[in-house]
Length: 108
Image (tube, rainbow, N blue to C red; front, side, top):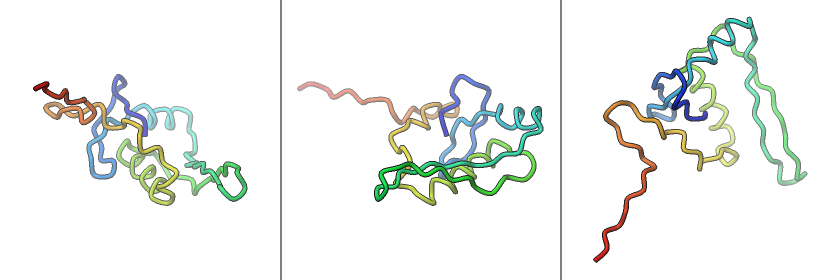
């Protein structure tokens, strides 16, 4: 879910917003003939430990848009565990402004 800014990317939906998503992941999976197993980590406040969870493997290749959809599913299962402060929409499609640019206040 990181911003792919400087890497080869396409803009794919992530929670309904176009996001620069790396295209290298799918190429790497194909080149290595790897199986994609989504993994999530969450802090368990009762045990004060982190839980690592392995999810159902993804069948076949995984396009950038499909990768974002898998990430959304994992995040929606425990939204309180996601780092919502990450600037994942920094790189914008042509013509769109960066939503993180600070707006300077005019002095009176």
